[in-house]
Length: 289
Image 1 (cartoon, one colour):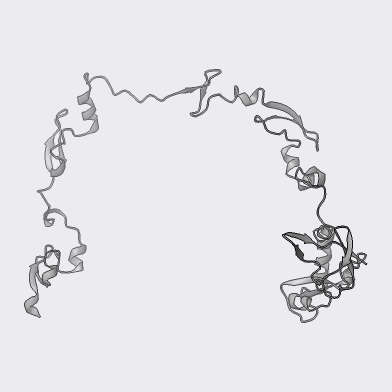
Image 2 (cartoon, helix red, strand yellow):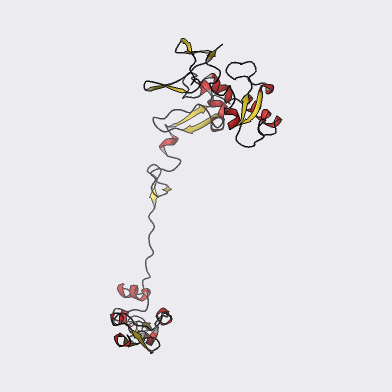
């Protein structure tokens, strides 16, 4: 086994170490500690004798350069290089001229990338209009781009949500929201739901479970419109207990009728959910007692 090993000398510590014949050409150090150290100065095999002293051709001052850059080094600094290129050495270096941008109207100084100053901008002329807010009546002067709609409210009034409800909203479609959605999204319904939870201490009245609770109507929401927001008609139930009630979604409503597309029909077992009729989805209408 030892006859197959070759001996080589470490470039760092000069010690002899044993290596495989296949590693002989590429291995230079005996250990990782020697390989990790930097080869500086005479220890580096590419060392050419260190810095070389040269003399500047302009100011005759000596300076140091490495041998690799000694051939092209003629000056000690950039200042001497610039003075050599100038015809007259007494003339100082010309400063860099900053380009100034002028307004196309008044020739005043402006920022780069602009054509007019703020005073002579086209937006301050024909595109600037005197407007009055329709809500608060505040007068303002505002620049409006070409082919843009004129705002009917000031910024303060446009940030209020009540100014965009119903017919005030440009996307209003004539009131297509169902009565069920309106009631359940109203502040009165949210307050009724909160009062029911607080009365039952935020736990199911059947099993006492907390978290993921529903405010259930004891008498169905669809059939008893007068007591929809009555706290005595509400109770707190968890999801499994709510699904087990006889009035959950469509249970116990098969004998009632509904109005759909102007016709009175029997209520199917899937009433309250979205039903597929051909390729169109329709939602079942209000219950008729």
